[in-house]
Amino acid sequence: MSYALSSGVTGLQAHQEMLDVAGNNLANVNTTAFKASRVGFADLLSQTLKQASEATGTLGGTNPQQVGSGVAVAYVTPNMNQGNIVDTGNPLDVAIEGQGYFVVSNGDGPLYTRAGAFGVDASGDLVDTSTGYHVQRIGLTGEADGFQVSGNGNIHIPYGVALPAQATSEITLTGNLSADAPGTPQAQVLSSSTMYTLGGAAARGTTEIDQLDQFSGGSDPGGQLAAGETGTITISGLHRDGTAFSSGLTFPVAAGTTVNDLIDHLNNNVLQDATASLVEGQIRITDKQTGYTKSDIMLSYSGAGALTMPPYFEVTTVGGAESRNTNITVYDSQGGKHVLSAALVRTDTVNTWDIILTSITGDVAALNPTQRRVNGLSFDPQSGALRGLPDTEPGAFAITFGHDVTHPQVIALNLGTAGTFGGLTQFAGNSTAVAREQDGYEAGKLAAVSVNNDGTLIGAFTNGVKKDVATLEMALFTNPAALLSAGNGYFVPSANSGVPVTTQAMNAGAGMIHGSALEKSNADVATEFVSMIEAQNGYQANARTIRVASDIFRELTNLIR
Image (cartoon, rainbow, N blue to C red; front, side, top):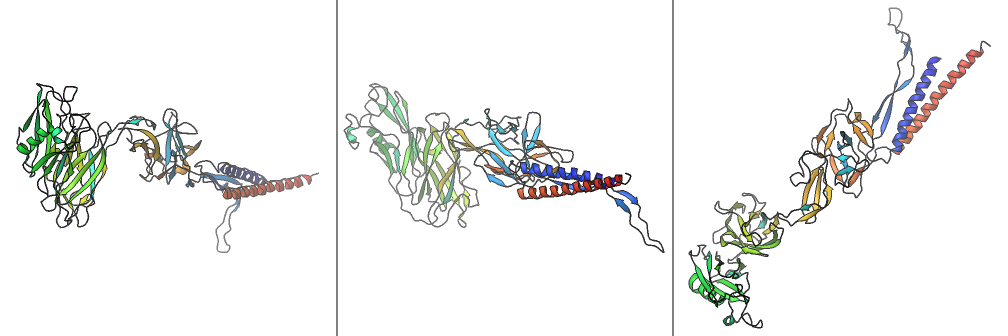
């Protein structure tokens, strides 16, 4: 009889615990990333009243006689399955699809969680918004740009931090250059980037060359050299065949010298296969023949005053039968924008092209003829694949800007990999080659942060540039069901969970990160209602066992009355 009473008591206790677990699950049905638990029962040690006997020659064997002593809770284990992932619209909310835990620090040590409701505090640190615990990072991401502090595991998100300008160092060109387009032969035209004015009244037309005044600039208020002041214009460049002008070509300048005098000097003493003229205030150099050419010219002044010379001559018409023009915005070291225009022109050598920097906007101080043309870009005659440039070619342009005349900016040309078709190609059909991208940018400020699938926080700056700010640290456990709950959705390791293995998302078995999302509780209302009914039924049944046993004891005591 006593066994019934004690068994009933254990049954009450076990089903009460079952009800407690179900109630806790229901209470956390809307708790972010909550993991529901389930209860398992096991019977207690039985009292053996009679041992089993084995069979003999005349009698069969008998089973043991045992009476159970009740039930106990064998385990309360969490269901570590992933909950549903829902979008929140908050870019710093993160959810894990798959295995792993975020790592946060309370200042005393790490804690682990799947609840990724993160935000930025007043100090610019990424924290758990419910507790203020610092979210931890892994790796060196963001340190080179100064976003993160070396040796500090907290993630810093410096909204508003300035990103210095980056000068363009490379331009990528892709597309096709026609192998068979006949084209129309053109005579190359160079035009000075400096406009010259006519003397006297502004009403005089720019075609009145005979009324041309002295060069602009100079030391006197009128913009010309004063009486007795002299200087020299040095002329350099390339003839049509690419040979350099003879060294020492100079033109003396004094008060009263005009642009027209310079043009006469160019035509009579310098140019062999081109003609110089003044058109609408610009000096123009026009080839006498059509077709492929390397002609170019550069003027520089030394002497009294500061006569304005064109920093370079724009190629307004590219000489050759087939050419492809393209342009792209590039940036100088201060973040200034410049539109760089270039042309790819077919040479007289089969399957070979040149690349010419035809013009660039902005404050250009100098553009040397030998540093604005890349010669000898060749293609395989059978496949049309890129062969590349000769070893003697730098494969880059060099431009001197006015704000930094001592450091020419070198811009390399990425034309693709030799033997492949990922960059420039030469097939039959139209020319489609373009300058696809460049690596420079103006200054900007950090305006927004998002999280990609591998846990990298990506900062978006006001200049359109994106930079990796930090990488979320994740932890994996051999037996995550054995983690100890520490409240607030946090876990700590136990003796049976295994030690945490830190990594980043999508590595070493860790799951994928979803930004602007949170993981829901995996507690199911219907399942928990069923568990409560089962707990109630079990509790009532065990209560009835105790009542019946009590009634029998009462009857027994009544026998002696």
